[in-house]
Structures are given as C-alpha cells and as structure tokens.
Image 1 (tube, one colour):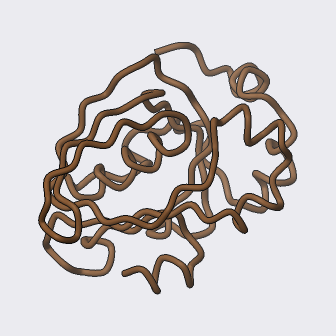
Image 2 (tube, rainbow, N blue to C red; image 1 turned 180 degrees about the vertical axis):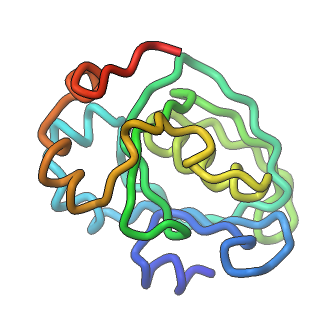
Length: 161
C-alpha cells in the first residue's frame, strides 16, 4: 500500500481502494510533495509534512469548524472539487503493530484522515463535495488555483450549508 500511494503520488490510501475489504489505511504527506506549493497556500491549509503511518480500525471524532478546500482522490484520478471538512479530528485506532493510538490532527492532516476513513466507510469525496465545483485537475489549475475559497464560492454561487 505504501508503494502504491507513493507511486501515484498520493498522501493516503485506504485498503478498499486496492480491493482489500479491511479497515486499514496508510498516510504520509512527504516534504517533497509540498515543495511546489506556495508558502501562503500551505499556511492557509495548515499543511505540513506528516510521517508515514498506518491506521487500523479507526474511529473518528470531528472537531472544529468546517473548512473548505479543493480535494482530489486516487480513485477519481484527474478530478477535484471543493469539499467541506472538519478543521480538527481525533482518531482512535490501532497502529501497524496492533497497539492502540490516539491521533489529534488539524489542518490538512485532519482532512487526509477524514478522506481515508471515508473510504473505509464506503464514501468518496464526491459524496461530500459542492457539486458545482467538480472539475478536472487541468481546469482547476487554469481557473481556480489562484483564487481563495471565498472567491471560488462567489464565482460558483455556492451558499453556506
């Protein structure tokens, strides 16, 4: 799973994405993936490197106000959409050695955990997205990438949920 995630490249991969019916996901947001992103965008998203780790049988508690950012997925390669997610989460799970762990995460790391745990529960980001924002990655880069979330919402006439 680690190799598949890195080859994509992605920041997370859930076992159901590769046909395994188990509650396991791998997560890693490598520093080299962040190098091409503007520092202000990293700060806006609360995105920092996250070391590789495994989560097994996770139970998630959503905390904090929802934040919206564009999100993509290895299962829907080449597309993205604006997705609201909790700004903070608590995840109780087992690690790769079967030891209980509690993860407190915020920012982009919290988003990754929510995204991967959604996969384990049979959901994709398209189940949570603002449908008007669904776009190809090419169009996202061409049109939306330089805009703030507020500007995207206004342009697409998306109101608060």
